[in-house]
View 1 (cartoon, rainbow over the protein chains, first blue to last red):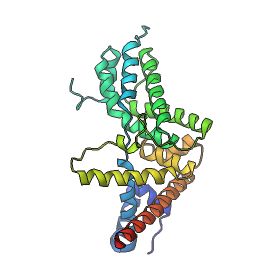
View 2 (view 1 turned 90 degrees about the vertical axis):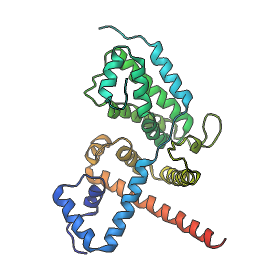
View 3 (view 1 turned 30 degrees about the vertical axis):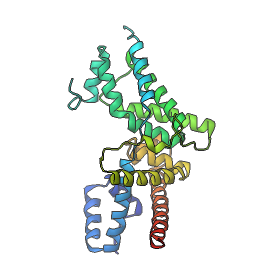
Length: 77
Length: 199
């Protein structure tokens, strides 16, 4: 694979922080290099999984926060 | 009030006029992201719950005393408060992970699921469980960058500034985090495949 971008450039591409010039450069290499494209797909898939990872706090915690809000008065300027 | 169309900024202006329902919508909209950010830093569900409460109570106090300057960026603001509190706590205690909820059950009982199929839920639960374990096993600096990029929506440039390193260092930490996660993921998948073959 001949390319003049770095691994950091690839990372910026995965995270949508690459310039349009860099994006088209990487897209071109993806189209002609299968193994590179496969690696990219794996990284993009992992990134997506991370984005969807969510934990929920307990209802009790949310209730406590709402109770504090209701109790606390607004300070007038 | 229709919360679907309401921006954070609109909700905050309603809240500032005394509409508690607006705050409830805002809290429910962002609680999971804020909690996930905290949890992945402190790795302790009890502590994460406490910090979540502290962070939102601090936000309430600031809003109700007119010390909050919105500019439409409530989420980055509350995430910053929560992140700072979590980092402070993490540095203070450096305690080992405790992965149970208030009622003593597994943390994954509180994962957010929208699927109805039992199989879908199981797959998602397995994926989340693996990911959570792998993220917890990352070195602190790599985990910090990962949390900031994925859950705090910070750019690599912003992460570099916030952590006082060059952008290449921030990118390097993220790169190693992904490499480590992929490596662990592969190991798990191989083990799983091997188990299936041996059935």
